[in-house]
Amino acid sequence: MAKELYYSPEMDRLTPQEQLLLDKDIKLVEKAVHVSSKVNGKRYATRNAHAKSFGFVRGKFIPVKNKAGDFSELLQGSNLGVIIRYSHPNFFTMKNGPEYPVYGCSVKIYNKNVPVSAKFPLVNVPVFITNSVSKFLKIHINANKFFIARGKPLGLSLLRIPALALSGLSLFFDSQIFSILRNMVRVLDIEKRFIATYAYHSVGCYRMGDKVVKIRLKPTKYRATPEEPLMDQTQKMYDYFVKEELSLDFQVQVGTTEKRTPVNNLLKKWSERSSKFVTVGRIVLPKQDITEYRKMAYENLSFNPFENADELKPVGRMQKIRQKIYNTSIAARQHLNQITSSKINR
Image (cartoon, rainbow, N blue to C red):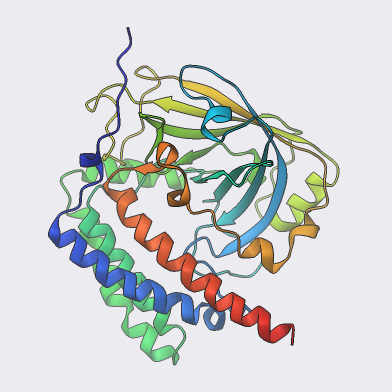
C-alpha cells in the first residue's frame, strides 16, 4: 500500500524570532494597504501583492471523486461554481503592456446552494526563493518600507533601496544557494503567452482532508493563440473568452513521506515519480463577456486560503506567515474600500 503524508500542526510551527519578525511585518502590511491607492493611482486600496488584475472569469467546477479527495464532500454538495482572478504578482499595478510573464491565478470554488467555499492562490512558477522564514520576512519588511515610501517624496523611497537590496542579497549566502540559482534560471526561462494557458501551482502545500497535497491547475482543452511578447493580457482575456470556452483539470499531488515530498522545502518540486498528479475536479469556463466583472465587488473579493475549512487549509511554516499577511491585508483593503464606496455613492 502506498504511503501517504498526513497533516501535523508541527509542520506550521514558527520560532520566537520568526514570530517577532512577522509581528513587525504585519504593521507594515497595514500601512502599505493604506497608501496603495495613492502609490498605484487608483480610487481604491489595492492588494498587498498581485495588485494588478488582468480580469475575472466565472465557470463551473465538476468534482471527480477518487481516493485523493472528494470536493463534493468537502464543500457539502456537487453544485459548485468557480471564480478565477488572473494577476501579476507585483505590489504595483503598472500600466498595461509588457511585463515579465510571472503570473498568478486565484481560484475560488463555491457551493451554489450553501455558503461554503475554498480559495487557492496559484502561480505559474511552482518554486519559491527561499526556505528561510526569517530571510523572507526581512525581504518582505524592506519591500513594504520601500512601497510605503513611494507614497512620500521620491527621495525617501530611494533611501530604502539599499536595505531592500541587502536583504535580497542575503539569499546568495545560503546553504541551498544552488537550488536558489536553479530556480532563478527557471524563472528567466519562462516564455510569454496567453495567461490562461499556463499550468498554475500552489506555493507550498494544502490539506486535503487529513492528507497533505500540492495543487496544480492544468488547461486541458483550449484554442491555442499566437505568441505575442508585447500582448496586453487584459485585452487578450476579453478577446478569448467572448469567443471561446476553456477547460482545466484541478489536480492534487498527494505527499508520501517527508523525505520524498517535503512540506517546508519550497525550493524543491515534488517528483512525479514519488507522487503523480490526480484530477479531483474539472473546471469549465464558458464563453462570456468578462468586462461585466470590472466592478468594485469583484476587485474586493477575498481569495484568502486561510478562510477555507480546516480540511482544505494551507500547510507549512511559510504558509503560516502568509496567513497573518493575508488576513491583515484583506481586512485593511476591504475596510478602506467600503469607506471609498460610501463616499462615491453619496
